[in-house]
Amino acid sequence: MERALPLGPEDRAILDLEGPTIAGHTCKVVVVEAGEADVDALRAEIGSRLGGVPQLTWRLGGSDHDPCWIVDSDFGLGRHVTRSAVRSPLDRAGLRVEVARLFEQRLDRGRPLWHMDVVPMDPGFAIVWRIHHALADGTAAMKFAGELLWDEMTGPAARPRAHRAGDDARRRRHLAGFVERELSRSRVSSPFDGRIGRRRQVAFAQVELGPLHDGAKAACGATVNDAVLAVVAGALRRWLAAHHGSLGDLRVKVPVSLHQADDEAGNRDSFFCLSLPLGEPDPAERLRAIKAETILRKAEHDAEAMDGLLQDLGRISPRLRAFANRIQASPRSFAFNVSNVPGPGAPVSILGSPVTSVHSIAELAERHALRIAVASVGGRLYFGFCSDPEILDDVQAMADGVEAEAALLGA
Image (cartoon, rainbow, N blue to C red):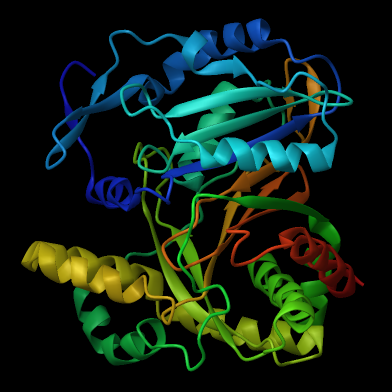
């Protein structure tokens, strides 16, 4: 890149979300349970492959009102791939604490907006990779991992899910139903609504993909994405019964990737919202109810319609788009966010050592104290939970509930 590259509207919107209590980055937590934390070898490997991801040498330039990406003329991997301050090897519980500590920190806006901390573990090591959401969404970050970290893979790489943009006439025909579904307000207040602070708590869960896929299909022909929402609903039901008492429906925001194959966009996604039936005690019935809601939103292309609506409003008036963004960001519009990004279907390795887990952690939003990010790699689903502990404590209990609910559906 020889000249300044303006940030896209999605990138700018995400950059503007960062503030005193909200960090704008996401995080990949990659655990390798063999070998040593050889930072020099990792830098050398990344350096040899960095040409495939030139975005990671960009830094912010321009002004606050007109930001752009420019090449960092003083770029050095020694500033971006470093050994963690942890001196003694950590277990899994210690890793969660360290990830939360790192996640609370801010990336230096004077440098390219990413950083890898190499953390010693017993056994092996972990890579905690923070990358600013303005630079890459979940799909782009997974693509970057394939370019930089994974050893050469023999299995198929993940592809962005196909989507159809639709047309203006179809969008107008379904506008009334779309507005009712996607811009309606929750009838109950969110238990995760509160003033967000700077502290974070994280938790991990993992589920075998095959049994969950087969169980969801056998139960009602549901997809893995439906099953993810169903096990999250079951875990929330367990957690709320123990900690909160209320089991009314909660609206969940589900991001949908609009990336096309081989596009270079850092952020290209939309979303739809639906209510999770937390009052339903039967896991199979919860799954059926969720499947019925997601089928409707896919058939009506709600995510694409939302993307088109926001783009149209932006062309008419940036203030109108900002107003719509405030409406859909309200805790009454959705209580929490669950993203699901496909990764490599085959197991992966780093520097010749097998990767045993790849968890994503996504940042909270104002008045939304819970965020769940899911990634699929090598036949497993990895759930990453992030919360504000002043509002939602003991989030690992919620993660444990995901594994228990997945076992029920898988059976």
